[in-house]
Length: 182
Image (cartoon, rainbow, N blue to C red; front, side, top):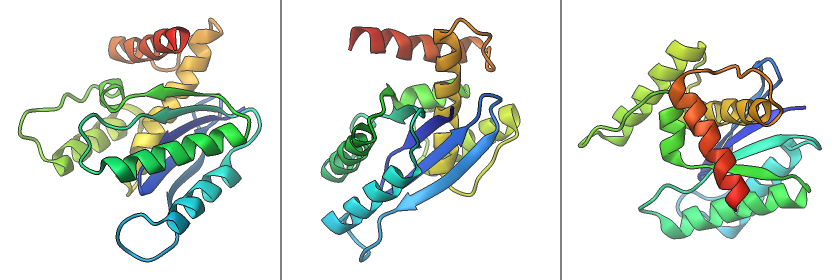
């Protein structure tokens, strides 16, 4: 059993953990094709890469599109395409929103912060809390999401969580409640 976190984007982060929280897979996926806007061949290649990495029995959490994203069409294509790959693999998934990903590691977005400052703060928090780092911020986000997937499984099975900070438990409970409603 693996716990998979996916941070969808034109460069998609994916991390798979085992039950102990050890990293089994950590990659950044990018569809092959010409530079520029996401083309259909690039999207299909990205989807196929994800499809090949997913295994029967994977428990998946995928990050939802950020509210107010500036690239709505591309975001919709990537998120929808990757979700359809998960579905084609006959796997279920839960959804975490971008704010929950930040909250899970205790990062609060400050007014006026640049995207780089936000990503640097998240990377520093992950390194401090879990001893994990990666050159790609998409993979770092996917690592957080994979930890959410693992703790979601533990909570659903009434087992002790690996991550017990109040804000982490609130995120996992929030995803559970949303799944029960949806």
